[in-house]
Image: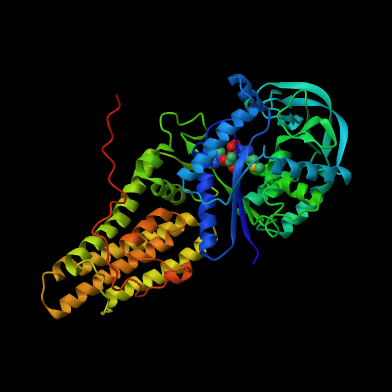
Length: 511
Ligand code: MSP
């Protein structure tokens, strides 16, 4: 069986992790967990991008070695993975020998094939972006945009990769693989970008200017340009594990699609004679007050604090429920609380409470079998079948937010079913038929709950596990077999209660 190999971008270690990094990890984790549930052999890679001028400068400012600085921040990123319950199989650091060795091999291979050449370059250089600029980068008034910081004109000898030679090949490739980039409209943007002629890519930096990098194997007076180094992580991490390359998907943010992932990377692979990944999944940005969230924004509120305050699954749920993959989303605590209260505490939390309370009260804590099937039960079961089938298709198409919405609709319908059956009234009656209806309603609500949380498992794994445990239920090994409405819970002994999503304490008034 071909592996499902999925990666995130590797994060720069020049600043601590923030919401943007957290989202990408959670999103990729949701895809990885979903594919595992579907039976794929998943390999999930994430890591840190540790070379370059900014890291060198940050370390210098603190008076420590770049490696020490990188160790520290990379550790923070690794800790974030644990905190977010991310199921990655590997974590790669670009300062590891296994990575550097493969970068050297790829570079040497390209050099030997004549894909890399030396030339004199005169141009405008942005220290902040660590790149040479082009005339088209200037603003209409001739100045350089703010994002480039200080721009100076320099002449230096460097090494270049023959990017331009592959422009036509890349255009043809993208036209032949319309689904290479998700969402599709992003692929159109890449083709738009490719209407302008490409320049060859400068892939070296003189060591006197930048020491903190991987020396070129064929000229140690230079180090490798950061993107050339970083992109290769996807391959270097698995180069010695047969059957994993090519990656099935790379998950990245929209800011690093063009040109690095959509232009440099496919061309690098093609020129190196390596297979191309199956696709690139491009997410949007978390915004605050109209700007992209970064380590310097959102100082008043660190969204990652919500993990401690409300639990990891509430945080994961919010990110996936709120963001329509590909588009931008505003992050506010208010919106977080709306989803938390109405969907997790009300729709899901109430159903859990009712199921446990009523089973304890009316059936001595043992789930009875359903023996009646009237339109109320039939409608709920029919809604389940529809919810399940649609959700599977939606999840396969990366529409996780809509799949969760459907699951919430199903949970609400289950709560409405309980209102209609009113087991608390049936419990007061000694009529045989009422008793039968009572048992049926208890079995029905419990089964609906079991099914709904199975469908949310890739988003809220710990919650699904907890709910299964209080339902006295151990799921089988094959996830898809868990999704059929049936009698799996008959006779299960439930717990008396479970506090899942407690109401937040009222907000304290600002001092
Ligand atoms: N090191 C490069 C990637 C190299 S991949 C071979 C890099 N690092 S980064 O730390 O700046 O960004 C890592 C990922 O986080 C990127 O995919 C980026 O889009 C994502 N995000 C950073 N801020 C973001 C938001 N505010 N919202 C969502 N994701 C954004 O780029």
